[in-house]
Length: 307
Image: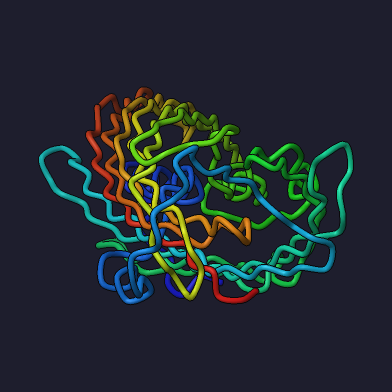
């Protein structure tokens, strides 16, 4: 629930809306940052076979994987020559239970064990009421190579954000990292792409991104032989909306990097660590006309905490 109501100025609401809408996005350019990641990597793995390795999600019935997912977004906005800064932190604990296969895909039962989002800014601090999503479950379909075939069940799980009602589907549309679908050797690359469409009250956003994954090598992480993959992403951000009678047009670009690990034998996504920069322009029209440049820096982390 709200701890303290932030300022109600139209410009402040527009900047805060950008933080909240994008806080649930950004394809899993995620993982523990430097020190945390290093602590989990105990040694180099043995060299792979000459013909390459096949990376594939393996979800035998009854397997339960639990993850901790964290993100921090710092935003700096220039509002008529004044600098507004804010920080949004989201933490979630999620579980995925394998319920067999259908048409070659994995059937998963997803439970949101915990979820919190807090925002600190010069206009005040607040925490979203995430009670309506905690403990909720839905069914998901995942392909062996990481495509989220169906997460429509998540659309029924909703909460109230600053910009209106939102659902949690976008958090799961790109949770699992994409695999190449063919044997790969160190140095091989494969593409990834994703689209996120987010709506909350009078605001709508779209993120289009493309990335290239590279198999860097193999390491032992939490006792499992893992492929270490680096990824680089670029993309565009667009959106429209209204705030206090003013029309908003949002445009921008994103650029990010990611390091993620995948357990080869077990077929498990182990986690990732990423950084991303969003350069955004918010054009405001109505009683007041102005252009607000906004820069967001994002750090994300996904960590396997139970299997």
